[in-house]
Image 1 (tube, rainbow over the protein chains, first blue to last red):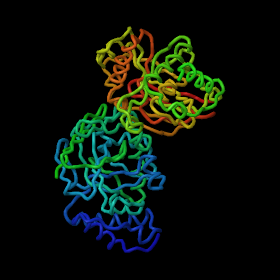
Image 2: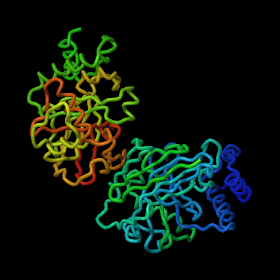
Image 3: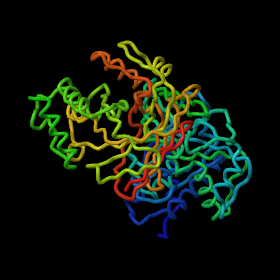
Image 4: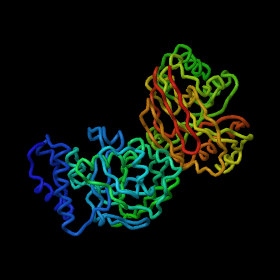
Length: 261
Length: 252
């Protein structure tokens, strides 16, 4: 691992979040930065955000689809915290002014029933530890200018997480094949894209197992009640004021957000 | 421009298993009406009809080709693959597979005002299907008229076991395409014109102008739901659609 000033880099991201003025990619200055450096910065940034009174209520996993992994040039997903201050409900208006360059992604969210800690967690064990699935939408945002991100940049920047909107309906997994849950995304009533659960690592439940194992390396667990955002089922869509996005998931139901100024 | 001559060029490509230059290069004035006339010549010589197929049903593909409506073609009975039967790629030019929702008609359906509701009411079963596209044009390069003349790239087709359509929202069913054990694409049924039954209804209304319609027992491939994946010897393609089931196609 390259020697870096992780606290200073975290502070730069922290300031970018507050001022909504993006910063240049860290990898511009040092192209050797990789995943390890990214997570070191992420850890420092989380400390700053928690010191402000925020709270971690779950995790997001990104880069779960083959096309996204190819785009960034990696062969595994990444993850970041979900902060309590960024959670919205079904039907909420989400103000654009909160973000820098936000985009919408529809994804399946799980709510944990049991504590789950790796290493060695299987997909079957992950399945057994999940309370149920929820229709979700992630607002991804990049504090790095123009989304010019490499792996270290996006990992440091909380895996480009901006916000999460969730339906209130937790659907138990019994009898559900999460690979095959279909999804249609509309913007202002017009069909934008479709997808199915398998777009996330072949099976969204495999995302939970992957996450538990990676967090477990640092002695961190998924806690009961935590949410896990399992990754986009389609290409991210830019947001404009007045847009209404609706993702409808077979068996899970819909989630709608309205985009405010 | 002789439609029989154009049809013969396409038939020669099939017979020799060699792709040809798109017809419009040679015949720039080829329009949709003429293209369908070429397709009609092919259909009249293809033997018994198993059914029909839609093409260019996704908005993305329509935007890409610069059109706002789909196209349709026919499925000859000789092109059917049976469950478990491998695809012999040596009989193809450049095969590509895509997952589709297949309608099996329970009764005849025709008319200029048919809606998705009428289609569903006339449907005996819906099934997961794999369409094997096999454009006769080099590298799948064609205009709308070209692809219509080439029977919308129809090659072979495989239909899974149909289930009754009652209570299934075909818009929302999840669709997963795997090749050699890896997920290559996902979608939901809405990827075809917002609703697969709407795509079929569009076709029935369009066919009505020529006095054509659907017959009981015919199958209709309602449009590709993902990008088509190229296949060669040794490849295995699996298409799964929630509530409809799974079909697997091995290639030799």
